[in-house]
Image (tube, rainbow, N blue to C red; front, top):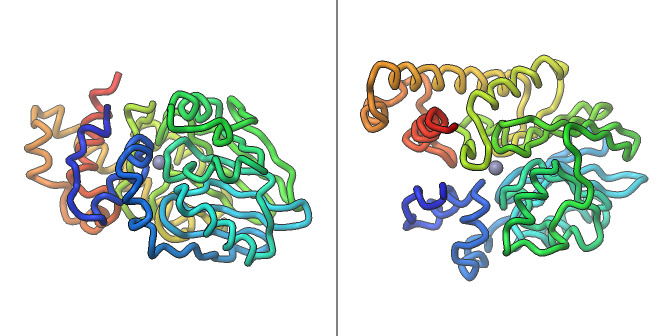
Length: 300
Ligand SMILES: [Zn+2]
């Protein structure tokens, strides 16, 4: 169980870092502490042009489309934030989301599914439904109703949204959502802008898979697209390319050290070098990133 490999943290900030992207932790650790943990969180909107917005609160960034056909959201953070998310949508002139897309199953992206699933239709990759349905803490209203194997196209608010499955990436059920007309792509957790990513190897994720998927996406998208990362600030293609460079370089570096007979503790002690200093300031510090690279190597 990957969650057990994490040390139980002491400070709320650390708790947040460790629970982000870990569905098991976010659904089972100290629900009573959630009220405090989210007390100061405000959900704020950033316009991306047309009728598309990014909402930032706590957890995965949310994509929103508001228009004549109604409201659509991509991901919905944690359950205690559901009403604040709805208020932020109301301020944009939206209403209860008709469609709710999940980029993957982690609790910091699907935590408000039960709230939004009462009135809206949840859409996700089939593995997202399987993983959520397998969790006894997740009720029926939180489950995706429409699932797909490879991709689905949604026609909404005068836009075409291509929802494209990215196999064996951050998990085994990730998708990116591309608004063709608004020229926006929501990357889910294939992209942590400016920081080392969490890659969920026990849930079918793969570092090489993320690298291959990012190569594919970068070939697909136009140079001037707005990019909503799973975590971190709004991005451009250059930021995504930089993140891919980091993945490729650190993946190679750690694998070469392992090939040379170094163990993971020795690699951690040596560090990844000054080039990636600062990338460990987010949810995943350098040590944890090296451990992810190491566990990826051991994965079947
Ligand atoms: Zn995640």
